[in-house]
Length: 164
Image (cartoon, rainbow, N blue to C red; front, side, top):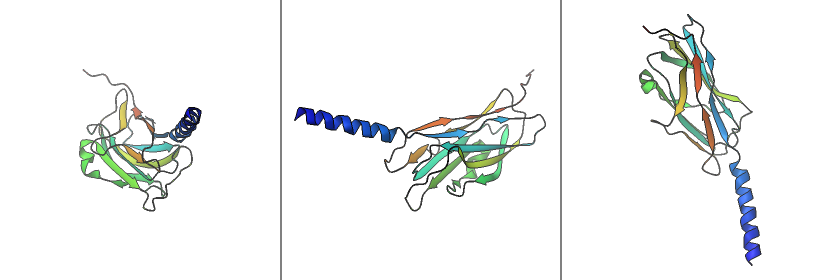
């Protein structure tokens, strides 16, 4: 009986590890800023986006350097609701869910959305665009109800600035 229990637990643990091995990765792409450039486009991509039911996050940036303008691309399979009320403070909450509750899968490194920003001041030594959990929690769900994830912030690299 003890061997049976051990074998059952071993098989259960292996199955659970395989299921939890599917980690979605959300990436804010890096951008090379050219002096004099008036706008930048920031894209959020996903890797291993398989059977996802919902996704929420907040994009965060320095509102003294960038001003949110508009959506330049939205993946037709995952059309996010964006709350631009907080954009003047450098935050853009995003929410998407699959109304059919079937789960959506995307090809590798598929763009979720691209956003246009007006450049107010030259970005110096790299300015981060990152996904954060305030005010909208970073959350992904699938049939396991909790999907492991990794997040990578994007950096907008411009010329270094001398501050007097």
